[in-house]
Structures are given as structure tokens and as C-alpha cells.
Length: 282
Length: 261
Image 1: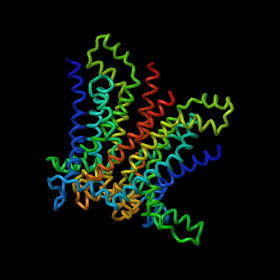
Image 2: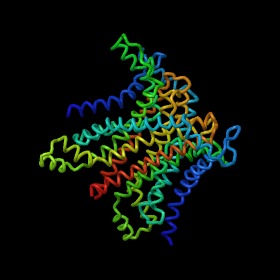
Image 3: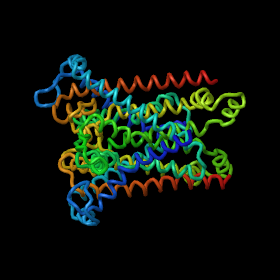
């Protein structure tokens, strides 16, 4: 009895908070997504499927595709940069390794707005990159990089690269080196040993890192807003516009649910892949 | 092969740090131009002290982050204790549910809270922002404190109880000091997330309740001045202090525990 009372006291705050300020808001967005738009913002209380129908408009499918493909490219680039990085770090002298690791974590704790702003400083027409290029190649005109999809892509890779490196490092650091020695003793070339031993064993890290990069980038709002200059739309920006300027809350809600759907599919695929990996290794 | 790996390390660090260094260097630039070096000055920092709107935003950020950290640290710690110490029916469901605020895109959380607030008597102001920040903060605090509780030695508590301590004494004299580094780590993380948050604040703060992040955003959108470099550098220095504190508490904790064993 006493134990039940203790448990209740410990659990009540978290359950209260999650139900009131997390689940209820999600339910209210879900309900909103089936309502009609009010004349002056707000909603009209009658049921409609029109908001979901509008998602299949060519314009929104295009934006959706742009968001998903940008997030996929971002994940791939982070993996290509991050894997060799984590691989090298995991084999580095332990004493200096922690300092290098700390240097990866610093940007992770730094304000995201500022890290994004830093790229405005670099990519502007009169920015640092163009001043540098102007010295090296005086004949070239300045490159117009800011407010392009490329700028958004760079900003996203920059913002989320640490999220890829840290889980990869965790996976590669735990790797049992004797397995690699065994492979080499049995005559495998270093390349073969890498493809058949290291890579499969680091798969959980690859999957976790990819999840941690893909999920926030697919719904990114700030990076496209600041580095894309509002000229190229991503799903996060369209949602923001529905709530802040267009005042079409029901449609914004439907878009949010579609975004959640993508994230959920990603999560399910992740757990599937992880389970498959576990069943293969055991 | 080794060459390629080393080149990649250099490339990644160059990529990670050049933008940050550029901001720091140009915060000392005397010119009005954002990224053309003209000379050394402290004047942008001096101008920060005269900026009343900036200080108001700073104060709001500190209030929000302070209260949200306190509330979410308590809720997150009790949740972590319940999950690690008790077996109850919906335990798995709760632990999964607690990961949702972490993986859900922040824009979805932001608009969901906005849509919810307009249906309730809670006005859009600082309170609505604090409540919203607690939603993601509790999830992170729970994760950090749970990690601490998992590597925890139960025999110490049993010993305390054998020696006649009641549950309350056992908690404050044994459990709490042992998990304190986890709680402090969780609180530092929550505070940082809260100060840095832009998206959720942007949607849930009412007009006139600008926090530091929202203030910086509006400056970036409507007229960048070199002052922003100085603000950024100050925030950067702040982040570095916080990481060092976080690592110190986490690292110091593991050495004291080893000594005890």
C-alpha cells in the first residue's frame, strides 16, 4: 500500500505533464486537421477531409519531396564525413581522444541560431567565402550562394553533423579489435576485413546516427528560413506560414500530421533494421 | 589510407570551427560592414550594454530557462526514479512515450501547443513558454537521470536501512548524493536547451514576451548589424562554460564513485 502511494507521488507529475501538455495538444492538432478554416483565422467546427486532399496537390507534393530528399542527402553527407571521422577517433590515443571528442560536442551545445547565422556571414555575396575567392581568382564574379537550396543543404549538414558522429563513435569504440585481428590472421585483406567485420558491427551506430540526422532535418524550419531566405520552401516553412501568416490552421495541422507520419515511418524502419541486425549477429 | 583519414579529420574540424571563429573574430571588427575587416574594437560589446531590448529579452530568457529547468528537473527525476525502481503496468508505454518529445519535429510540438493554448484559458506569455519548454526538458532530464540510476549500487541503500535509517533518511543521505551528478547534468542540459530553443518559443510566446533567441531571430530577419556578432560571441562563451560544468559534474561523479568502491 505504502509502495503504491510512493509510486503514485513519483509518477503523477510526469503523467500529468505528458497528458495535459503533450498528448492533448497532439490530439487537438489532429482534430484541427479535419476542420474547416475560419474566415479570420481560427477554425469552423465542421468535419472535412479537404485539408488532407490538398496535400496531394502537385505544389505540396513537390515541397514534400524537396524536404525528404534534402534530409536524405544531408544524412548521406553526414555519414560520409562522419564515418571516417569516428573511425579514426575511435582508434586515436585515448588521452587526446577525449579532447577531440569535446571539440565535436562544443558546436552541439552552441545556440543553433548562431551557428546558422555564421553561414550567412560566410555565404553572403559580400561574405567571407566570396572575399576569399576574390583574392584567389580575381577574375571570377562573386558567387550567389545565400538563399539557394545549396546554402540550406550546407547549413543542415553543419547543424546535424555532431548527431551523426557521436553514435558512430560510440559504436566503433566498442568494437572488439580481436575480431579484426582474427579476420586478418585468416588471410582477409584490410579492405575485406573492413567490409565484412567493421562495417556490419558498426551498423547500429550508422542506423542511430542516420535517424538522429534525418528526423530533425526533414522538419527543419530555421535553416531553410534563414539560409534559404524564404525563396525555397520546405515543409517546416509551409507549416510555419499556415500558422503565422496564412492563418490556415486546419491545413497547417494536416501538414504537421503528414510530417509526423514521415518521422514515424522512419522510426519504425529504424527499429526494424535494428532488430534484423540483432537477429543476424546472434 | 591513413592520409585520407587524417585529411578528413582536418576537413571536419575546419568545417565545424571556421564559421564559429568567423563570428568571434568579426565581433571585434570596427567597420559597419558585416564581414569586411577594418580594425580592432570593443565598441560592439559596449553597445550591448546600452541595448534595453536585448536586456529585456535576456531577462525573459533567464526567467523561462530558470523556472522550466527547476520544474522539469523535479518532474524528470521523480519519473526516472519511478521507472528504474518500480515495476508497474504501463512502464514500457511510459518510457516509449517519454522519447516522443525528443524525436517529434520541434515545429510540430510548437504548433500543437499553440493550437492547444488557444482553446484553454492559458494566455500566450511567459507561462505558456515555460510549460512548453518543460515538455521537451522532462524527456531529456529523465534520460540523463535514468542513465545515472542504471549504474547504481543498491547495497549502499540496504546497508543504510540495516543500520536503522528510515526511507526518507536513506533517500536524502544515500540516494540523492549518489544520483546528484546525474540530476545536475540533466538540469544543465535542460537549461541549455531552454536558452537555445527558438522554434517552440517563437510559436508559444505572446506579443511582447521576446526571449533572447526570438530577439536574435528578428534581428537576423530584419536588419543584421555587427552587434549580432558580439551577442553571438557572448552566448558562445556561455555555452562553453556550461559544457565544461556538465563534463565536470559527469566526470567528477565517476571518479568519486570509483573511489567509494
